[in-house]
Length: 171
Image 1 (tube, rainbow, N blue to C red):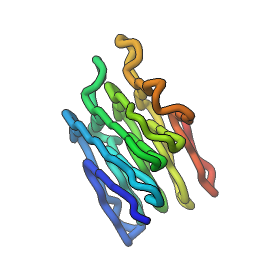
Image 2: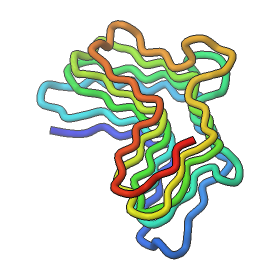
Image 3: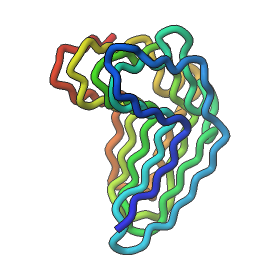
């Protein structure tokens, strides 16, 4: 089996004492198509991914995954039998923040038979101080900014998915 990964930004950090900062980046204009063979595991697209230590994404200047308006700035297509998991921002760290970010203009489709999952923001494993606030998943002006086409069903869509063992602030 094999996983297919596509990361816009990825950081692995081992220190919880010196925070890493990811600020003011734009991940856009991506057209990613994958054909999964029988027995293949998953397809992953993650706009920005942080793992380990203390990482702050956008707490000073927000990051943009896709665009705040329009549709299809990022196009993700899954064909075959794999189970695609698409994430705007993934934060699997000890502590930190995901704040002031925009995730939008993402279209997912294809003829895949696996269950499609999408999370605008996905967090897991935080054990220290952690906050998610003032993020935009979708658009305030464009309908269907996050668009999961019917051919990818069944599907699960999360605006923000928090899986944490500590007290987190979500606003």
